[in-house]
Amino acid sequence: MILDTLTQELDSYRDTTPDGALAQTHAPLICFDTQEPFLPLAAGCTVFRSAAKSPSSKFAIDPADGTAIEYAVWWDWEIQHLYELEHIWVYLNAGGDIVRVEASAHGAKYSLQRRDGALPLSDDGRPLVYSEPGKHGFAADAEAFSGYVDHIIANCRANAGEEGIHTRNLFGAAAFGDPSPFEHRLARRYMQRLAFTPSFAFNRVFDLRSVPILPWARLKAWIPRRINAWREHLPQIVPHIPLVCLDSGDTLMDEGTQRYVDEVVVAAEFIPGALDLLAGLHAAGYPLALVVDGSVAGTRNFYQQVPGLWEAFAALAVSEQVGVDKPDPRMFRAALDAMNIPAEDYPRVVMFGNNLSRDIKGANALGLISVWLSWSTRRTHTPADDSEVPAYHIALPLELLDLLERIELGLPATSQT
Image (cartoon, rainbow, N blue to C red; front, side, top):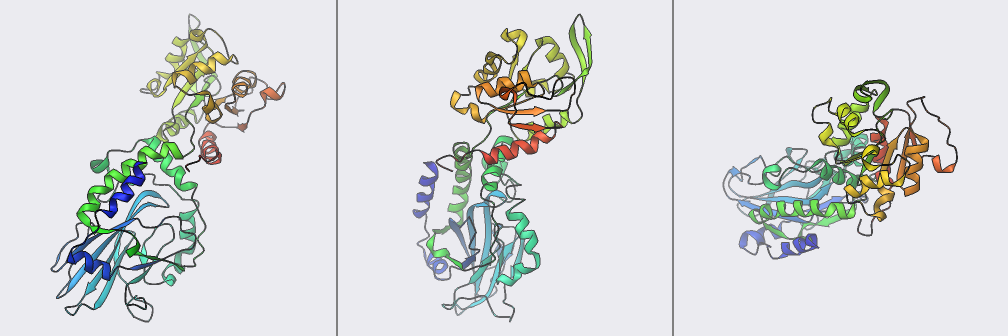
C-alpha cells in the first residue's frame, strides 16, 4: 500500500548532519490525552543561527546570540481535517542551554512557561509540552486547557471532521490539487468515526525521537504525496453511499403545480426545501440518479428550469425510456448499471421517494436503502404489506441530508477501516 511505502520512505530522509544531531538531542516530549487517536508521524527540522523567516510557518524566528531549533511536527490527521502541522521552537544560548521554548496553537505562537514561571522541561532537560486533544495545539501544562473544556469536547465529538481536507497554510490546491466534494465528505466521515471524548489525562508521553526527524525541505516535498495517497485510499476504507436515487413527483416536484402542453410537463414548482436539498447533496459529493415514472421530455423540462440542475444528475432512469414503471426492478437497475454499481453494493444505495407501492417496494426488493417522504397526501401513507415498509421515513426533503450522514456513519466498517 502506498501509504505504508511513504511512511517507510521517511526513514531514508532522517537528518544525519550536525544540525540533525542537535535536533535529535533536544527533541521534545509531547504529552497526549489517553484517548487521542492521532499521533505524529515525522518532524521537519530547521536550525537558525541568525534571524530569519520560518520556512514552514508564517513566523519570524530570532535566535538572538544563540541557536533556535524549529520542529515542524506532522500528523496525517487532526480531529477536524486531513493533515496537521504544528510547531515547537527550542532556543539555546551560546553555551547550548535551553533558555526558551515556544510552540504553536491555533495559528498563533506562544512562549511556553509553567505556572511557576519555569521552562517546560522534562527530568532529562528536554522540552516537555502538552497537546490539545484532537486539535494538537501545544501548551506548557494540562491546566492551559481547563478554561475551554466544553469547546475541546465539542471539537472532538460534534464538530469532528467539519473541515474535511485542509486546504490552507502552506498546502492546498497549488500543492496537491483541489479536493472534490466527495473527497471532503469521505475525510469527514473518517474523522467522525474516530470522534472521541477526551479524558484530559495526559499521561501518554510521546518521544519525538521515535519518529523520523528530517530536514524541512524533505518533509515539505513529501507532504503533498502523502495527502494525495490518503485521497486515493479513503474510498477503499471509508464506508459510503455510492449513489442516491431520487424520485421526482411529490418528492422534489410539487405535482399539484404541473403545467402541461400536449400532455407533456413544461413547468412545475419544487417542493419547499427540494432545491436546497439538491444543492446540499451536490455540495456533499453524492452521485445522484433520477428514477422517475414519466416522459423524458417532461422530466427534462422540469429540471432545466434551474440552470445547471439537469446536468447535476449522473444517471437517468425514466419509465418512458426503460419501458416499465416502478416498482419493476429494471427501473432501478437502469440507474445502477449506468453508474456501474455492482450487486454487492446495492445495500449501500439509497432510494428516496414518496410512493410506498412504487419507490419503496421497488427499492426494498433489490435490497436498496429505502427512504420515504411523507410530505404529500396524494397517495397512501399506509404500507399494503411488509414489502412497502420503508427503512427510513422523513417529512421534509431537507431532512434527507442529516439522514444520509447518519446512514453513512452506520454502515459496517470495512476490513481496512
